[in-house]
Amino acid sequence: MESEFSNKFWDAVAGLQNLDMAEVMALIEENKQRRVSFPENLLLRHILEIDSKSQEQKNSEKNQLEKKHLLIERYQKGDFFIADGSDLPHFRDDIASMANPLFALKAGDTRTMRYQQNDVKTEISANAEYGRATIFDKDIWIFAISKLMQAKFEGKEINNVIEFSAVEFFKSTNRGLGGKQFEMFRDALNRLSGTRIMTEIETGGERSASGFGLLDGWDVTEENSKKLPLKVVIELPHWLYRSITKDEVLPISKEYFRLRKPIDRRIYEIARKHCGRQASWKVSLELLHKKTGTTDVLRNFRSAINSLATANVLPDYSIEYNRKSNMVTFINRDESAHNEDNKKALSSLVTNMMSKK
Image 1 (cartoon, helix red, strand yellow):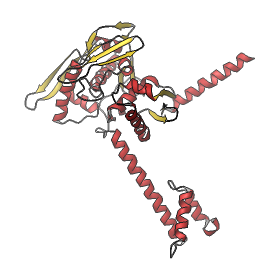
Image 2 (spheres, rainbow, N blue to C red; image 1 turned 135 degrees about the horizontal axis):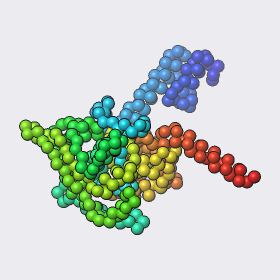
Image 3 (cartoon, rainbow, N blue to C red; image 1 turned 90 degrees about the horizontal axis):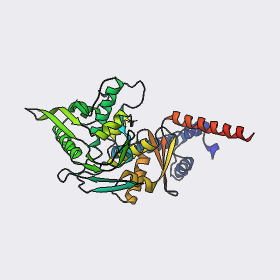
Image 4 (tube, rainbow, N blue to C red; image 1 turned 90 degrees about the vertical axis):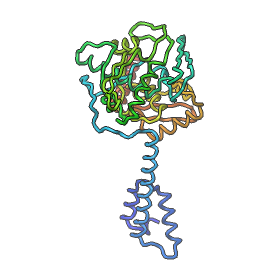
């Protein structure tokens, strides 16, 4: 077969990005069956065009899949920056809420949710009018935590009351600036204030065993002519403030705010909490399902994991799902994490070899 075509032909075939050799051979055989077959140069052009169209199709499918999971990036360069002397992500999330599913994954959820992890029981109740605070409402928390951490790094005194501009918040969290966004912002503040939690959460070496809200209070100063919020003041609950003072927070990627689906945001939180800077972390699908706090059935959750793994858009981590073992693996995109794991493995091997001498 190879003798029928020049080396130039086969060199071009070897460089194809999408078609495999079986598909190329099928096209060659199809060409033979034509009443008037293509000469070598036209056949090669035909093969290259099909390969190119295949790539375009793959790119289109990839873009469509990404759109299912990612919001557009509204601002190319954010105005928000935490100068902590490192090149880590500039936003912070508190560890306690990353470990526990305090925030609803669906809007309008008014049910009382109960969870138990080991000996710790958690009950989350919602405001009947506004529903439970959602994971998108948590952006206000993350923004406030990050602003307070910025002040800490700059050596400023902080407390649990923080003031900021609404526009700064919208831009920092990749939100639009339309009137609807301002209405949604006030609703989010009401949900955060109205969501009540009864639980035991250990922060800063102390254990809280009382009921509290996700916000202790808020105040918005509006522009009279347009009724748009200009200045926002929120009062964080003391247990959350204690987490900040004890540095019980983790840096998260700014790309978190581009995640479109609530379940994707929750999965990222869990990966960031448990995988962290390790090279990888494995967890069973059932346990991951439980950790998210989703009310969706396991079958639908499996589909969500498969879709997120295929889209490959989760910040900091890629995902592999093994249907046979029913295990989900989060793989750190940072090569230095893998190098560190290799160093630890080599050190352990050397130690074991030395101990056997």
